[in-house]
Length: 310
Image (tube, rainbow, N blue to C red; front, side, top):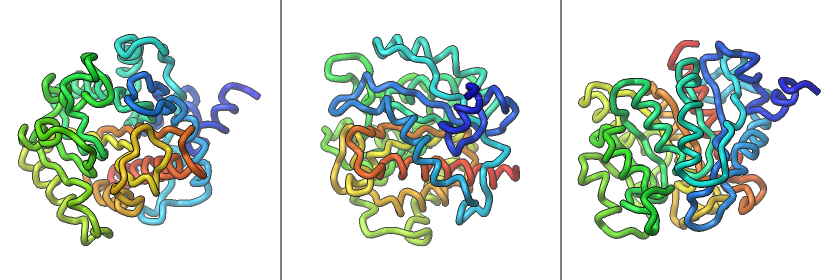
């Protein structure tokens, strides 16, 4: 079997490789790194698991958006990264990003959440301005250090704000619920952003109930001059009942229905890219986490295709 044929069987939605379809407007790439987790490792296996789960989606159109991704999506495979140090990983990753950003609107399959910081650095350089971010997560990720180390999967939000990679007023967190000191938990809000905790969203489901969240994001985006938007989806925003396969599960999270509704409704806004991180297949049951991740990425891609009129 040729390399391209093999990739077509293991790629997201069995789409062609970026080598075979270099002009595809959308692409996915795997970032198989989990060297910065603080609890359970395993997210390095997520890109393969999410791709496998996506194969259940290949035979039909999206039930809301009424289209599929045939002819517009390619897969760059897993980008080669060393399993050494965090800085080694980021140093190897950064040179690989500009060409992909030039050619495609990307969905990145992590990996732990430390991969988001170099992605934002690359987008900031590529676009020439700070980004607005919609961040789904159980954890605030605003710690100033990573258990004594300068950076990790729980520091990227703090670092992104410090480095001017993001517009803090256009930074929205959804699903936060983990234990944290107030200074970390409220950091996004004190910097001008907004937070919708998992407790805030209990009992709210469906487009009408969740419309205030989407509207609040849109209003800030428009008031700030419509900066480029980026979506970062940590699968642990979901309750462990819906996503047990993750490194640091936190009870009391969002349902799959809430997450997919929010992603669907947010696709009325033009995003420059997204990542889906922290799926840990070794702790999954019946591929629940991988399936939820694949559905969320598929939904975002289909929604952005429809918005772009492609």
